Length: 275
Image (cartoon, rainbow, N blue to C red; front, top):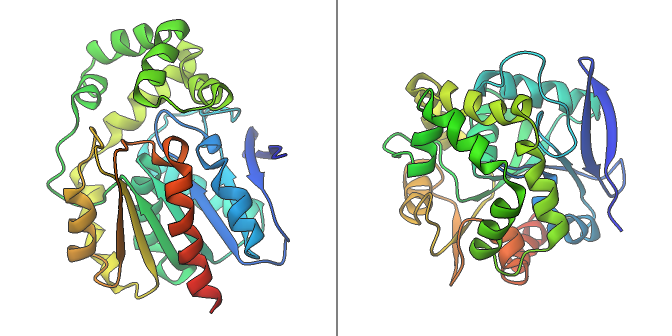
């Protein structure tokens, strides 16, 4: 059974999974919004079984991790990746990202290309031309965003909506995802993060094309937030070596919606590295 660990980093509690041998090649899994490390519940044992060390933090403010004592900006999450990797004593990682975890992880990789051994990228993009989905636009709007996240703190309604979006999802996973909405203090994390996004932080995106490591792109066919068009753009503009796998009849949260369809491609990725 998976159990989260915790550590104190910069005077705040950080919750995370860390499985496999400490001497095994590290795999850093970065979740998005509104998620937690429980997004990777089904992937972590599979990755560990192949002889790797999957490490998945609850980003500050999400899951059981305390939020930053300062603004939860994109830049501060980039710094968190450096600090967290140092805290768990890893230097080079295989990077697995989803949603905002991609904006954070891929942007971090632009500055640390020598520390990335491979990528698995899902339903995310660090490319110009992406238009915010309707909910993100509301979160980015001062005044309106505050009202929207407060409404989303109605747990019964939120759980009902998420179960409609991910019919097969486990209750324990949604409980962990919901943590971000529990208080106004944590709800503001979402607003601060979305409002910190700017074009300047996207500009180094072409740096990724210089990283000639294995890349697997896995995407939900019916993702309502970021379409499969960006799976192909990510390959064409950044990772020509990438293999793309579209998961049929699935949405944005593919790792908990259709794990049995995602896991074979994840295993294929890591098995090819072993070989």
